[in-house]
Image (tube, rainbow, N blue to C red; front, side):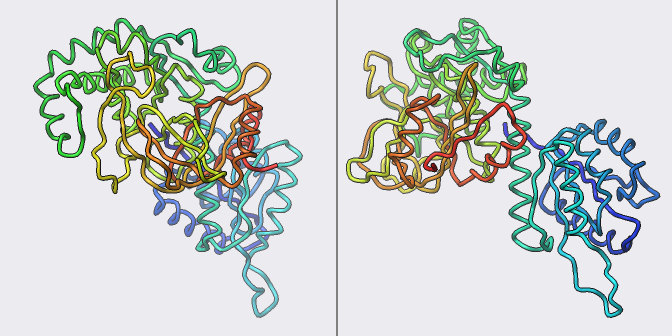
Length: 465
């Protein structure tokens, strides 16, 4: 589930400029943040004598103590008239969270030649202190708070902070062991924990299978009604009764997610699960994705992490999916096929005449049916892959859009990018694999911003030198 952030609102003032004008700027920002649906905490009760503004170095202690108690995920330090640079720098250093520096554009001098604020000047002083204290920070160019420049920059920062929080608090459920021939999905649990704080939470597959089978028997009547309601737009294939196990898989995984406080799942996919169920629960996994929980097949731990990060960066409330990069487009040299098993059904093409359906795998035909077959919708896409090992970790990403291409089985779309040969060379050089995570919409801006706060992670922009 996409994580929410709590923002520490830390407006900065200075005794030598207009306190009244600083309060007007503070009130504007509070209204903007509330209107944008941001969860934030301010300093009115911490610094009542300053009207909630940091104005002197002695304010650092109580402000830091308050933000620590509130467990903020990010810090916003707008300079409302000039700035108390030492206090701003120490608060940012002690809080140790993604920090946004910005101030409203100054007005013209008054008729008598005086000025209500010198915000730009104050930010230049604070930026030097942040640099000297080795505090990474984000910045929005000096502008009016009503301008698109501020709106875009503030949104980008919030999404970047969400990426940072997601990576540092991620809990991935591991359902089943990696099968032997998936060497490309080998990962290191201890590296992920030590470098990023990512926790891998194992769960016994045999017990999960047993609970799914029991749940399906007990709730078959309810699941049959749910399937009947879907049948107007979804094709359950020649054995619809057997496919009811998908709903039990969804619900049992949800129970596990709630019990273990998981954010995403990595699933073995085959061979044990299809063998014991007599079907692949791809539909169940797709329904989990639509509920906000990324599911990575084929024991792809790094794939689950990739999807969680892309969802955190995205401005849209849509699920990530994890296709294979497979073949180049037969006519478009900058396009490639995204393809495979269990994307969320909400991502289907609404203009496709054929209903999405359950069918047999196109390859590994010895496996029972259960994979999803449909065309994905059209739109802009962001592609990303978190991967690596003890030698270092990277987040490779790029942006493109869907384009028309020939039909193929299972879920699919064709992705066009700026320079596929360049992408291909970068992906081949690693540490990436054929699996990539995707989200609709463009969100490379938030991933690039998040990199400021993730020293253990190298960012690589696909298609750029």
